[in-house]
Amino acid sequence: MSVNQNVPNYTGDIAAQQVDPSREYSSENQEIVFSEDQHAIWADLFEGIHQPYLLEHLCSEYRSGLELLQLDPQRIPTVKHLIEHITPRTGWRIERTVVRYTLADDWYKKFAQRIFLITDYLRTRDQMEFTPEPDMFHDIFGHLPFLTQEFYARIEDKFAPAYLKATTEEREVIKRLAWYSTEFGLVVEDNRFKVFGAGIISGRKELTRTIMEFYRLGRDNVIDYTRNAFDQLQNQFHASKNSLYRIIDGVNALHHKGQMSSESQGWNVVNSMYESLGIAREGIFGGEVILVPFNVETIARIPKTVYAFNPMLFVCESLAEMDAILDSYLKPIAQRA
Ligand SMILES: [Fe+2]
Image (cartoon, rainbow, N blue to C red):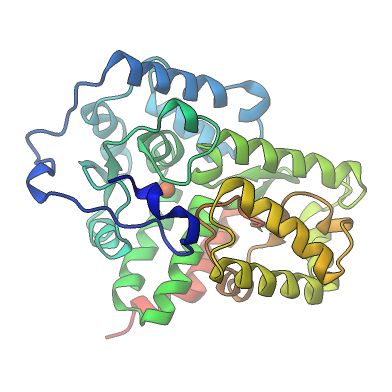
């Protein structure tokens, strides 16, 4: 069964897939023989993003990690290759799974053991620019370069211990914090906004759309990059908080009605929402995505709009700041008896 059959009215996490447990990989059969077509899809996805004009907008941890991981642009890597390049550096291990989108509870149990799951599914040719479902290109190209980096391993280490002790409500916040940091986070580096989240890095359409917003903010004089960019973003956020929270309420309403359930519909309904709220498309609201300083209060309010583009992305002043903000929410939960 294709998980996409549920898309039209689906609002939450990607639908769980029925898996025959007997098909799950064991420690002895982690490797797959891929078809030449699959290697060709990998090569095209790799080339589509591995371009200097895109890479320069990715944060430096990612770029260093990508070099260390030594992925072959033409061939899907073996699990052995990934483990050899990651485990000695950060202790994280990689395991293949047949589950195409792992339920958060199972995922976090593996996370607690410092095991990162990669799926055996690769997107098809009609999903080269955007796929809501994390496939192996997302898992490997988006996340694994980071897992060579101590900082990232430390960030990933925070989620599972808190998640496993959290209440249902807190679990939802934790999933959103993970979504808007490791999947769709942005970070400031050298006074420029850079992409941190693996979901943006592995999806050409959302990546280019995000980069266009970095440029638009400069072009429309919303952010003057010769001055402190993050301070200006903070000021804009505080000055526009009212409108911003009305937009978030609107996104929640659309999301619950299942109206953010596809790439095109998602953006179109957000566009018309601005109109109905009477919010002018200017300043921080003038682009196709709103950049907001990373903070727990706002992230807790906005849903994961899995099937559509994210209408809002969150920017950390630095990776150290991301570390501190995540700790402020996750540590007290993780330390519960
Ligand atoms: Fe991911």
